[in-house]
Image (cartoon, rainbow, N blue to C red; front, side, top):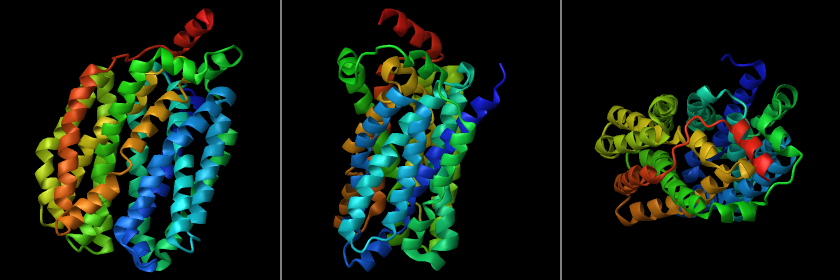
Length: 406
């Protein structure tokens, strides 16, 4: 079955939406030290911005998810991207830390909506047999954004400073025009548009076991990703005293690994199943841990970072398709993003926790990173065994079934 032009455009738009969302998020992790210096405070105080961003994301997932379930995926995605781009720009004008923290909270609301809306639009549009690969591609948008932020930091930071990094973050607003001209609405949403559907609360009550399980799973997944990514540049700066160019190169390397991992395990899940692919990817982290956290040279750290992110984003690469397949049809734009971002909320204290732990152990960021990663990798491998396996379900038929029984 070949792809239509519309299916390609939807995939491109969703991938770029998540890439540029992540780009705007990760621009900040490179400038903690600079913001702390300008506002005369500790790095730990600045990392609260990450906590606020992550904590606000469930609000955005709920708001934008409900809008997408009611008014359509396409217009909601456009509004969402415009919001996070504007707030990113305003962050660069912050006169003090308090203002910056408020803006990063608002950014979190906007960021929280994009993933669920974009993944629902895509999974409901692309051919069924392509979902695994597309899932890996969509999730690769996250490290792609980190990679793009790494390049911008390495090339432009010395000229534009930390405020200029945020000004560059307004660029994603241009994507709105592409969606407006080239991206169609989800055919599954059109099927369900003109009929009465159960509300969010009623649907969650009917699926309460699935909801709790998914939130716990996504909490662990968010500790897995943020616990290995957010403070890694700070680890390289503070513990190894690498210059911006070296930090940028290592960050680029780890994100290439993340993209490879997401694409590989997303595609592999189409053959061996979603659960098995996640199980294998998560456990790869354990033998890689010593090289990733405790190496002493830039080259070996880069190799470790590359391999670690194959594991982390390999497991994550299956998540967009897996959550969409196990989601109730009536709330597919809300459920995956909402449980994902609630997991973010529960894991939102990761950066300050890791930073405080490291500072209390003579700036030993390696120990903080390794402890977090090792624990959650094992928990994810165990938890995923209890998930449903719904690889390849026909979402169109499933939506029609709901229609006939509503």
